[in-house]
Image (cartoon, rainbow, N blue to C red; front, top):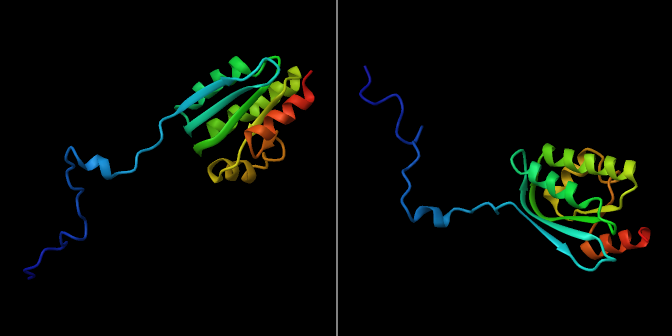
Length: 147
């Protein structure tokens, strides 16, 4: 017969309760937001997206894109501040590209960080979508093709 327990407390430690000040030391996820910028009438609308694009936030991205992709001077979707891009977000991007091709709309995507570039590269979408490294580059590309 053993006098020691089967498991010691270090084998399966339960999470410690958190106090009111404990959350300050934990990293917080960037909240999702879209800042739409209309520079000049002859420049495209620029939508700066912040945070994670996932199943919960992709519908908001879709609404923003649907509201602005048919702007006369085009749309730049800036994903340089996106820290996660899920399949639902990729669907919004491919649907936008399909619509833009069908309706002859000008749009561009700014993708210059690993959380955005990696899924695009893995799925072969980086070469399919109008992808640029910077907002000025994307704006210049759209201005070159729009009257």
